[in-house]
Amino acid sequence: MIVLAIDTAGVDCSAALFDSAEGKVLSAVTETIGKGHAERLMAVIDQALAGANLPLERVERIAVVIGPGSFTGIRVGVATARGLALALGIGSVGVTTLEVLAHSYLADHPEKQVVAAMDAKRGEIYAQAFSGDGTALNQAAALSAENVAELARSFSAVVIGSGAAASAGTGEGAGSDRFDIATVARIGAEKPLDISRPKPLYLRGPDAKPQTGFALARS
Amino acid sequence: MATFLRILGIETSCDETAAAVVARHEDGRGEILSDVVLSQLDEHSAYGGVVPEIAARAHVEALDGLVEEALTRAGVSLDEIDAVAATSGPGLIGGLIVGLMTAKAIARASGKPLLAINHLEGHALTARLTDGLSFPYLMLLVSGGHTQLVLVRGVGEYERWGTTIDDALGEAFDKTAKLLGLPYPGGPAVEKAAQTGNPNRFSFPRPLVGEARLDFSFSGLKTAVRQAATEIAPLSEQDVADICASFQKAISRTLRDRIGRGLARFKQEFAALDVDPALVVAGGVAANQEIRRTLQALCIENGFRFIAPPLRLCTDNAAMIAWAGLERFAGEFPADALDVAPRSRWPLDKQAQAVLGSGKRGAKA
Image (cartoon, rainbow over all chains, first blue to last red; front, side):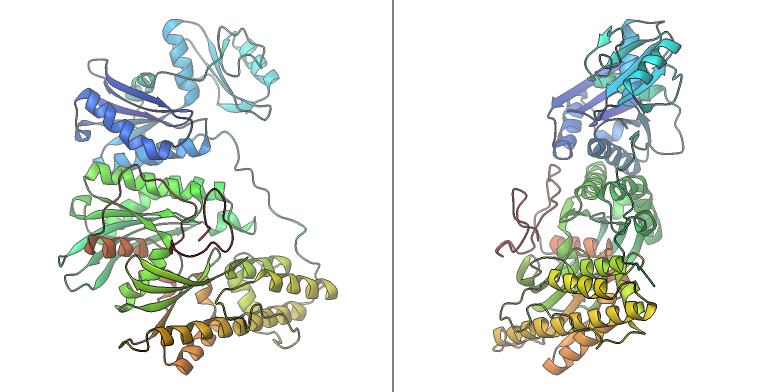
């Protein structure tokens, strides 16, 4: 199966083509742009297709990073993935950023348990624990540094990602939330094709409060 | 280009997620083949207004399903579509991104041209879809986000004659409703309350009446309403009804003066030409019956045709976006590249001076 992976959830704008039957990455393009994903994404996808020497019509599945990450960035990717899937008549699957970080780490450190932890700012960390084979051990959530440390202790897991330092983790894989777009394709190829389409994983509310005290008193 | 065309339209600039398929016949006549709109009203009502992040979240979950439904209802496949048109501004950026990216993806995968449409142009051209109106004509757009009087000379040829220098008219209705504890959206609630009210109890200001320029202003009126209401609080049902009726009267008076001057200018400008003058209304506020009656009477007095498209085509919808795409496609305007950026601000009339909201993102509208 030919999988097209796309990621616009962070600073990168990336696309890759992967042949799951051969287990082979056909092409991968990453532009580190910070913003402007909506403008660049289609060109990045076209570059990946050109690199793999494949027309878009050959793609059989779309894998898209659904977050956590930039709310707007996530929606650029998810809207594109769902639009492509609709027009091509193929399936699409969502892959979480935390899952990609965990899988990237586990590829080099198999059989360890890992907590993927991303600095979510405002004193929070997006975190989730995974077993050595990449299976999620809990629900992804926005947690305090203490709770991430607690999570790591309870699973005897190593903490990786930009949230590792804040949670006073072992810091073994600490630092970056960047990953190889090919990992998204590999994970996406393995996922069962759900009926439900990829949905953003925000892990935070929309930050709006109902207005009160504006209306005048009634008699 | 006199061929039969069909375009898929997408609209996500505010709190309606919408998709439609519209056809343009060889003779230039438009036909709506499907028109689906999903309103997010319930998601926003607790906040008394549209919350941009909530709107964007709702758009991305619903849009592809609506596109499928629009195609199914129209009985066409993507292969049979000639182009994909999507609102790319002005509006809430989070929603615009969802609509535009979906459109880019569909255009790329189906090998069809992409048309990035100005939402205001959709409103401006609707009367040609519904009534086959010919150019030129005047369009009054009155919604929660816009209050503009625009001369429509042709496709892509717009002259903004007047705009609000502060609040949009729909915004004034919403804020009045909020102040009086009426539900959101404020327009229908204020109109309903006004029915049992005394329009002469309060004498509210009629902003800019008598001014030669054609602009609008509603923030002073809003303040006057607040002051009058605060003075007599706590408010009885009758107080609320009287305030609403007096508020609507002030607005009708203002529009009468402002639009009356616009009609006079139109007649003067096109006196030498054989033009059948017409005023088109668009936007959610055009649903208000008192405002409609005022405009209708004004048109009759001045010998103008009054055109009010059906309400679902006055408020935000995708049929008008598909239609604007058809007008552009048939007029052989160039398609847009797939790197086109959404624009939260995008004035319809590039020549018009910025009246408010100018900054690094440019003039507001």
